[in-house]
Length: 152
Image (cartoon, rainbow, N blue to C red):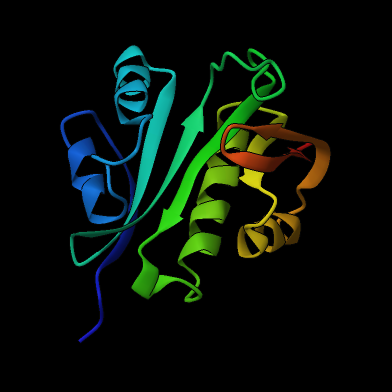
């Protein structure tokens, strides 16, 4: 029997189901993410297999960090995360393809993201999709890269 695989946008009411992918109670930013969803500046897309939440990727249009968003030009890729047992099976790539096509459809010409320098699997995936490091920084969580992909 073939699995029913779908990528779809979810709203604030379904967002708590993302706890199946990552520990929403432990994340210090969960309430901020929910506020952004409610305000319309964060759109959440979920990869589901047979109705189960497997992966998440978020499109953010407004950020306090001007490196990440430029109104109408640059959106921010946030929260690319896949359940551990589904990693390295193409879920992240499928979410990336979906996200890039969505950003183009919404009229953006650039996508930015931030990634921990030590997250080599994620850095490799982003580079595979044409992202390049444009800045390196450090915060209370460690060193990170800011990466950018031009769409046009």
